[in-house]
Image (cartoon, rainbow, N blue to C red; front, side, top):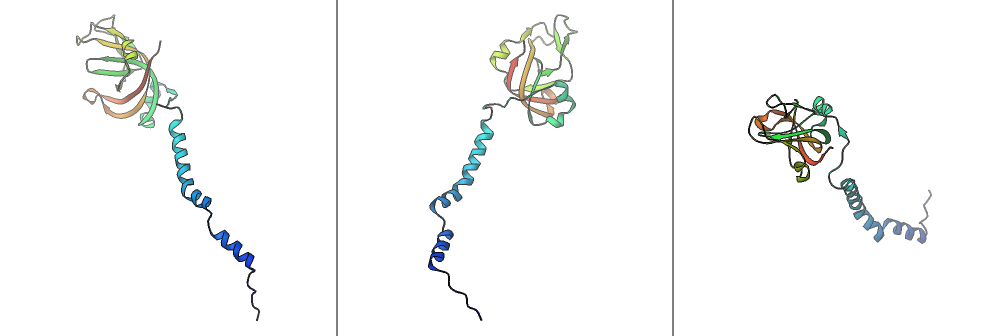
Length: 171
């Protein structure tokens, strides 16, 4: 029958030391996950501070595949048109049948909500001889905002909407 020899005292001390956490290990164990989480949040929110700039989509890409872009930030170029009961983005403007010196937007339209900003709004073209009697504003713009697919605008007549976060006139 064999008996095991007890470990030398130096091994007992070494094992005891390894089992105890040092103060630094305790701090790291508690705060490292918190620090990593905060770092990841900071990195995710600071990339391109403000509204993230997206690559411009073509107008037809949004209209042809609305479910793909639903509830996503998009940037799109088009022709903004506003007047009585309309605030919309079109792929083009054509000559109006009401007054040949006026323009009117081409269907389909994307309802535009939110603020274009004073600098943009003041630089839009204006036509005053309109069927409603109210002035209409229009211009070539680049709009960034939240794209949505559903029922929007006056009398829910629009299948698409962009809530504007940034806008600029395209010369």
